[in-house]
Image (tube, one colour):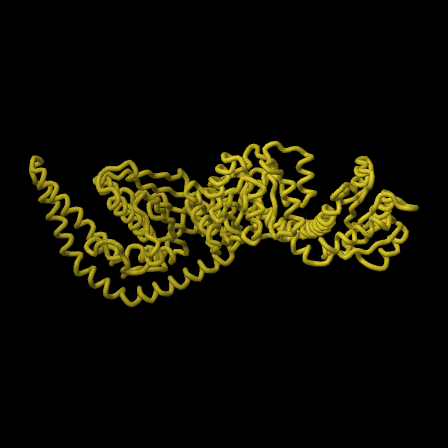
Length: 638
């Protein structure tokens, strides 16, 4: 935008230049100090989009310059600015054809870019209306005034098509014959006067045609009554009033059109709001908040609908217009993800979506993000719980079938390998323990080495047991078992090892738990595999003692699908499972460990055992966050 700023105060012009250069670099400012210099620049008016004119200038005033620009029909918007604003000056500026009026008070510099943009937009919209003929019905009984008006319009307002009648009655006949854009009324008419005409048009006929009143006496009381009855504007027949008249007629038509458009927009907004508020999909409209480096750091709510309130539990009146960083407790990493993710969308205009689990409602949703304009974004929340559950069941079935095929093909081989290794391994473990027990306590280094041999041998023994279990599973014979005994027996086996690793074991085991039908040895094997994995994850992240080096085990009864279940949770605060391998951790022989310490069969075997018990083995894990494995088993007392 190119702006001619007519300002004789160097401080004001410098402040405006600084503000616009920092906030609106696309605005180019040319500053002059006098009316004479401004007119010289306006000899080529196409060089500018807008004139910003101070009211008081050394060689004239802003209103005179405004009238010159409008008389010459120069193609640029005009905004008047003053340091001592009053109502009379504002009215004079707007009636003279200014597109806006600014008082140098408070934060006017911060608002200046928006005011200039809006003024230019209004001028261009108004100008498009001026490009069309304006049909004006002029009710005037004085032939001299009619002739002067016609002559002036013929020279200075060729776009105005003037039709004249002498009385109010004739005017009403013309209303029936043709449509008009503006009605121009002289106050003193034979028979029905202008006020009576306005009252009849507005109150009896319901006409919305814009009306401009012309009065020869300049009676302010008459003008005030006309405005109250519904006139759009008025002008007194003072010297030069004919120069004001085209602008008043055009403004009356423009603002009438604008009012109709706004009414239509409001009706459209009402329909949109009804749809917006009642649709079962959640909607939220936001504005992005930037820091001093133009990076997204927060956002504020501009509008939400009822479905959004139900999904999030947030009340509309509590969040509109507020900056709220974390608002949806069910979305993982909300504080990080939503700001960077939504902020990028709002600034680039991209569209994207992500799925999340909303814990308070025990449902899955997909949030689709779009940016209707730069700096703003809309989020749409849709319930996709049924789809997610169907996909989950499909994946579980496919995984189960793949594992059954793999287990059948490698079971024989695993059994043979395990038997060949088991006997010599037991001998190594016994000899290692005998040596360890006979080493002098003073030989600290030797004790450390022998303990290491025992530990690694125990690790290999676990692998061998896994291989034997894998190859010799009997999937059909179950008996009643107490889950408390299974957990306690498993924990007694691993306590010594994890104590040596400086790992704390926290157990939450209810006093009374139901009996379940299962193969105790197999469930114990599953739990041992989960505990061993948790131990390895902690040792990998914390080689030495650390307060977060904790394994938590808890058992909880719960109900699902009308059935009773037991859940055993094993939690560790290791490094977490990377995204790229989460889909593969239950695959046979897939492992992230060194091949010397693992075969990749532990979780595969565990999943097969749990599925044979008609249970579920799932996990939650994010890199750098606690990992939780859930062993869910149905309770069957038959």
